[in-house]
Image (tube, rainbow over all chains, first blue to last red; front, side, top):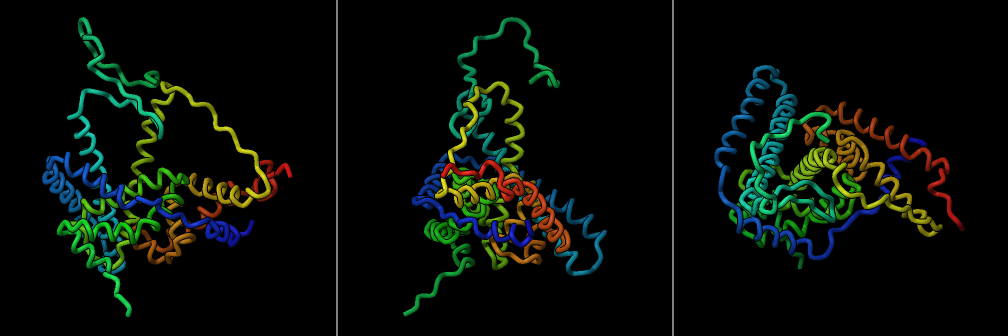
Length: 139
Length: 193
């Protein structure tokens, strides 16, 4: 198969369209998120993100030459890292919000089902409780 | 009379002030592009829809930090790409738990009919694209499907143009290898008349 045929096959893929009601659902999720969204951790994490950005950008700035294209590349890399930090922050924040919910542990799942362990239904353990060691045999 | 469309930059400036109507306009304007891009990256229409919504939510939340560069769609694609990357990490963790989860049974392949052949071709190509490593998938989709130049992709991904070309080339080679059996008349495309 020729390379150009691969390109043709990719371009032949139909363009998808967002389903109707997409915008409404985004706004609903925005409302739901804003309502229950504590302002916790945002500022410290922003400071941390800025520090991480500086940690990346400053050594990069020392090492890189004065060529404008290289500066642009380094800046783009720093932006990319910052985006990843923000994404990770959002995930952690969501997990923190989850911890404020009833005491359940999320075990996993797929598109259709989530498996959770409700700690309120687990009887109190007798005696000493030890954490399980994480080894290859754990799973 | 021709009404001038409000620019993305103007809308983002209003979103920064918390203007939900401006935000809704931006979502309307870019939702198809974002969902289409995510469908190509994930190979899963439903997941693309969900990640697409999350992409816009993150745009809203990060509006204050958004630096106007004249191309909002590139910024949206970056958020979307990062979401797919994070999902990949989450899936890895989930796979550790899989032995404890009940199986739904293997999906049964649908019987192909001549009328479905093109649809099947699209499905195979989309699946093959979605299975590529992300470092090849993103530049390949941006270049071949979204029509971005090598320069723009290099700028967006923060790497050299040569790296982008090389990744796209390697992505094509991967795809070729994956699709070759079908291309040569593999059993998956045989029809029953």
